[in-house]
View 1 (cartoon, rainbow, N blue to C red):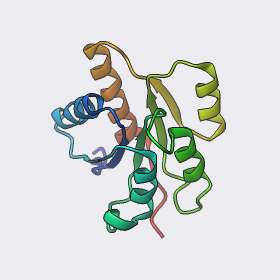
View 2 (cartoon, one colour):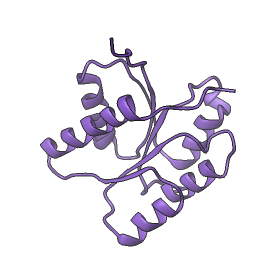
View 3 (cartoon, rainbow, N blue to C red):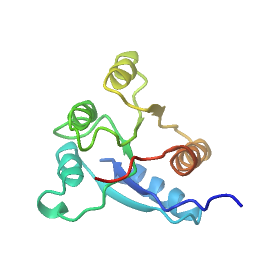
Length: 147
């Protein structure tokens, strides 16, 4: 009998309200028990991950969906800080951004992003990408046990 998938915690770091709502809706509509937390900027993402301030007691995500073009601390800065932190560096990060710039792609992988996905423009493709992300999170991602 196949092992039942455990619910996964996902952190979405996205400043565009329309993209955020769309991602939330698509992930919720697949009827798989995920918990999705959303923050809108890089500083909040780091505070969430460290359980600081208003994010005290926040769940540790199993997967992070990270936009690059964020106000204040951008996605590359968040990724660099995350991967330099011994307690957080093992969390898989999928870059989900509108940038198709080669420099952004190269820098993201240099900073140890697990995957780089360009946000599609049409809704059908966005739904396909979101379902692929969910499948990635549920089937492939395995986190080390919490300390």
